[in-house]
Image 1 (cartoon, rainbow, N blue to C red):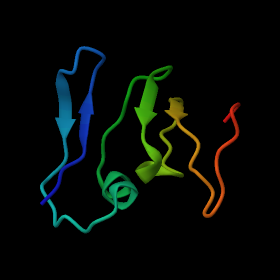
Image 2 (cartoon, rainbow, N blue to C red; image 1 turned 90 degrees about the vertical axis):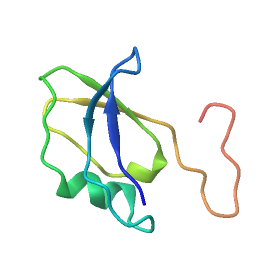
Image 3 (spheres, rainbow, N blue to C red; image 1 turned 120 degrees about the vertical axis):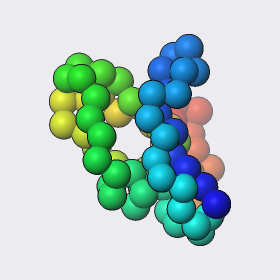
Length: 75
């Protein structure tokens, strides 16, 4: 079982998704969930959400390690 949770910088939960089966991909669950953030917000997400976007929201995400390669010091 799993949920995606949207929280603020103080770790206050703003929005939990419905509970779904655990093998469901994070991005797919996010795509199927209708929620919005105020324009100009920043959303920090891990690599499980690769490709997820919200209108007028800056996405902060670490770079995913290429298969069989390491990330550079800059990445």
